[in-house]
Image (cartoon, rainbow over all chains, first blue to last red; front, side, top):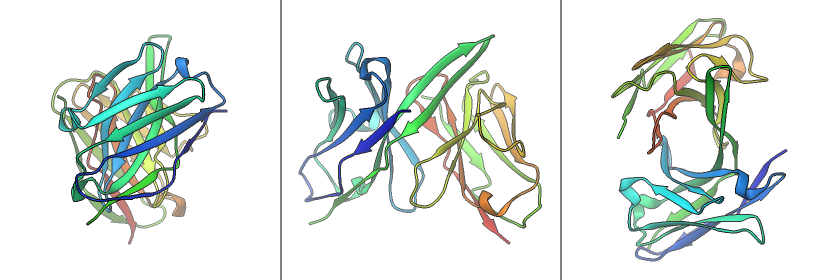
Length: 125
Length: 107
């Protein structure tokens, strides 16, 4: 059973950076595709980007290009999402999630199956 | 980038009602369309994959249909535990994208 445990809530000032961690257990990190999704208060889900630990490949949503970095520490089975130049609009709950890709009998199931508990990041002066 | 548009943004329904939510993609995504349910303070939960596949453990009152650009999530008989927000999501290409959500409230 895969478990994702995220770091605790953060309060940051505008212009600062935040680094959220997501520790993976029950699976080998290099076999997963890790994605980050955020949700502002009372708003919908927003996909931020993905990180593939197997080859270190990243793909970031254009909105976050230049401000976000997704990395890993294989020695601790932990992935990280760092977001810089924070502004008040970045106040949100940040989720890590694994993307499972399985194609069987012509049907491809590509889903976000396991999720962290979420990390609230508050940006306020 | 592919944009996902859901309708309605919210709806009120009673226990036992049949509920339908629609999702439209800005370009064809074949059947690479998933549906998630999210309850307040919780992470989303996968319900339907590949437009019509029922995820293991999900009640059979949930069903999905569609292909190309137009998709539907149907709850055949709404139960008290189904009051939540529902999101569609395309897995056809990166960047991945979610619809804006449909909040199902008690009438």
